[in-house]
Image 1: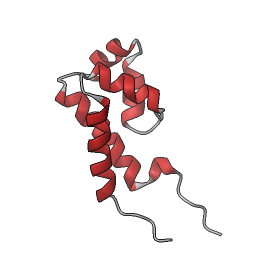
Image 2: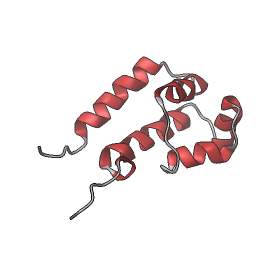
Image 3: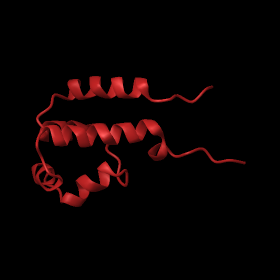
Length: 90
């Protein structure tokens, strides 16, 4: 029996990670600078961006605030990215 892929390996999750990284880069922040704004080490940001650590919604709100982007705008971008991701047929 084949095991289902964990969500951290799905195409949609990779798109989310790219969006998080893109938001950071648009803000002109290094991983270290974002980590400092979040009160976390650079490795925290790196682990999120490579998919080793996941964000909950409140952490995503903090990420957006630290990158000076409105969370609603981030969510709209996310919705757009996810609408382009291949979906599993049911």
